[in-house]
Every structure is written in structure tokens, then in C-alpha cells.
Length: 449
Ligand SMILES: Cc1cc2nc3c(=O)[nH]c(=O)nc-3n(C[C@H](O)[C@H](O)[C@H](O)COP(=O)(O)OP(=O)(O)OC[C@H]3O[C@@H](n4cnc5c(N)ncnc54)[C@H](O)[C@@H]3O)c2cc1C
Image 1: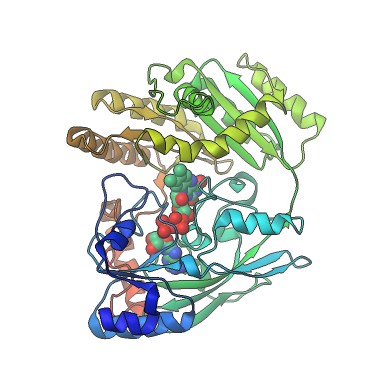
Image 2: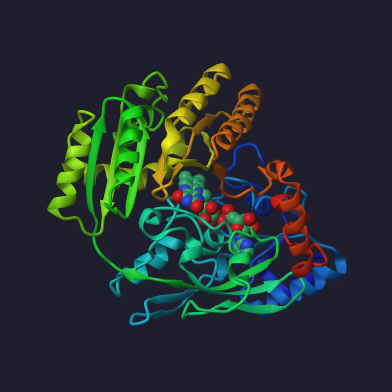
């Protein structure tokens, strides 16, 4: 393995424990595995040589963007070779008139948006983790994020993809004009979590850049915050982004902003309040009046600019700081808009039963669905707490499914999820066998080999 990888990647092949340990995890607490090697390709040609060798030797190849996934997709739980896309990070073309940008998969999402902004363009949808995450990882997980309320998921923004499959074929899927007949093969690779092949080039649609107007409201109960979300979703008002958090999270954000990231998560606050933050590309007086009326039904006041802008800015810088207090387990759940509070209450009950420190928040993905992130603080040295958090994660998924909700990516953290859907699992395996007949691509992830 060593000599083959060195001959392909030279100084960009890594075998020493101190290098490999950096690739042993993503953002899931307590899930790790040391790879046998790691490589940093610069071109499709190198990837093809790697696939050739892997087919002969039976190596498992694990694509990795920036390792911010919350489901273990890039974690080498069964060993294998990490294929780190950090050096395939070019923005290849920005076409202003056609409103698209072509990028390599290892490009940092925030960097793409920064470059687009210089040409008065923007990506319609970005994850909360955009300063750290790669666009390849976002596409490979069919991510959802800020902007989704108005523009949908990332799959709606991908115009074409170039992929190198596990059997070594280079395929160009989709089209800049958005119209291709027949099976939608491009979408098959979006959300495939690196199990079918490597994504090597992505054409994304862009929107015109517009500074956001941010408005917010503070509610006396979290329950009211969520009811107000449902009320807004039933109007014609279309914010770019709608974020909500419970009082525990709000208090936590405030403490972090004040420079006290180690402030305890005060779970007693929970339903004592909540806030709603809406970012608009354009908002007229009529929309503001409607929002003001809806907020007032719950005794809340509409704040425009000022305080809201401050909160919006704090939220962007909040996430990296959160990790200063320890690892956080974030569960990404998708919940129907009319039963979120029921789900929240049941999750809180489980958290109390299991003595887990949980805080709630998320954003609204569409008129129908909220993304709910129950966050749990976990001290990884406390084996009992680790076990309790694992149990809580299972319970959250159960509660979500009972309410007709779903989860996003599966990685290696949630592979059991598919056991409830044997037919789906069987078809997914058949599809994988077509594109990856040697079973070398991220084997075991998504519940398929
Ligand atoms: C604080 C926080 C906030 C987050 N917010 C959001 C959010 O708002 N929305 C959201 O969707 N996610 C969110 N996430 C999860 C995560 O950041 C996203 O899934 C992100 O897009 C992953 O990008 P990455 O580069 O880190 O990918 P990785 O974690 O490295 O990889 C993710 C998956 O993609 C595969 N992959 C990566 N590159 C390629 C490639 N070139 N070809 C084929 N497969 C590839 C990997 O094998 C793996 O299965 C959040 C995570 C954290 C920690």
C-alpha cells in the first residue's frame, strides 16, 4: 500500500500515526477509527490511479471534505484510506450572466460565497457550518441550511456534477440548463455520502447578492415560538432564513457572546422563552405588519435591525465557540411543522430521564418541515455520560419517526436506521453494486457495503 500510494501521491500520502489521528473523527462525539493511510489528491487522474489500485487490492476509500459531518460519514470505522479533498479546492469559473459557479469539491463553502459576493452573486443555500465545511461534503449529504426556506435543499442548486465512480468511470451528470431527459442520475449521487464514487466537480446555481434585513421576536414560552413558526408558514411571507431557539440555547448564545463559553447549559430555562430570527432579502411594510400582528398574538414584539442584527452576527460566530465547552452531539431531525413542540417535549422528558444536558433549536426548512437540532453536551471522558447520550440519540430518532419525521444523513452513526426499510436497503445495495462493483467506496456507510 505504502509504495503504491507514494508513487501516486508522493509527499501527499500519509502513514504516520500523528497524521492519521487527524483523520480519525468528524463532529460526532465518541466515534472514531484510525485509517491505514490518508492521501490528498490534486486531480481526477490521481483518483483514477487510486481506484485502479483499490480494485486490485480491495482497499476501502473514504472521501473526506472537512470532517464537520455529524453522522460519521468520513470516519474510517473499518480502517481504509482517507481521500482528503483539501487540495482540490479551486473555484474554476464564475459566470455572472448565467448565474452559476463551477467549483472543485474541496472548496470551503464560505470561501465560495466570499468570491461570489465580489461579483454581486451568492449561493442560495449554505449550511450553518459553512466557514468549516466543504461544498463536496454538503452535496454528498444533500444538505439543507440557511436559505432553504426560500430555495430548497442543495440538490435544487446543483446543475451538474462530475463523478468518478467506484468502477473507474468518469461521468458528467446533469446540465447547466437544468433539463436532461430520463433518470435523474445527478440526484442519485447527491446524498450518496461517498458510497458510489468521488465527486470531482460541481456546477452550482447562484442568486443575486442582497444584504439581509433581519427581524426577530422574543417569546415568553418556547411553545409559542414554535406555534408562531407554523402561523408564519401558513402565510405568503417568504423569508430567506427562519431560525428558532429555546431559552436554554438563547442564554448559552448570550453567555458565549459575553465571553463565557464555559457557562453551564441551564436546562431549567427551556420553555421559559424562545426567539425567532428571520432574515429577508427583501421585506416590505406589509410583511412587517403581518409579522407584527402574528407576534403580538403571543405577546411578542417585532424587532427590526439593531438587536436582531446583533443576534444574527452572534449566531454565526457562536458555533465554533460552543465546542470550547466540550463535544456536542447534534442530531439533525426533520419534523412536520405542526408537531414540533410535541417532539420537543418528549425529547426533554427523555433527556431528564437519562440526565442528559440538552438544548433545542434549529431552522425552518420549508413550509412543511422544521430542522430540529437537539444538542447534547457530552464529556467524552465520562463513559457513563457517553452511554446516556447514545441512548438519548436513539430515543430522539424513535420520537422523530413516530411523528412522521425523518433524519438527514446516515454515515456510520445511524446505519441501523435502514433496517426498518429492508426493501429500500436492498435497492440501494443493487445501485451501489452497479457503480461500485468492487465495494471499495466508503464501504459500510449508509448501511450498504
Ligand atoms: C456546528 C455544525 C453545524 C452544522 N450545520 C449544518 C447545516 O446547517 N446543514 C447541513 O446540512 N449540515 C450541517 N452540519 C453538518 C456538516 O457540517 C455538513 O454535512 C457539511 O456539509 C459536511 O461537509 P464536510 O466537508 O465537513 O464533509 P465531511 O464530514 O468530510 O463528509 C461528509 C460526507 O460526504 C462525503 N464526501 C465528502 N467529500 C466528498 C467527495 N468529494 N465525493 C464524494 N463524497 C464526499 C464523505 O465521505 C462523508 O460521507 C453541521 C455540522 C456542525 C458541526
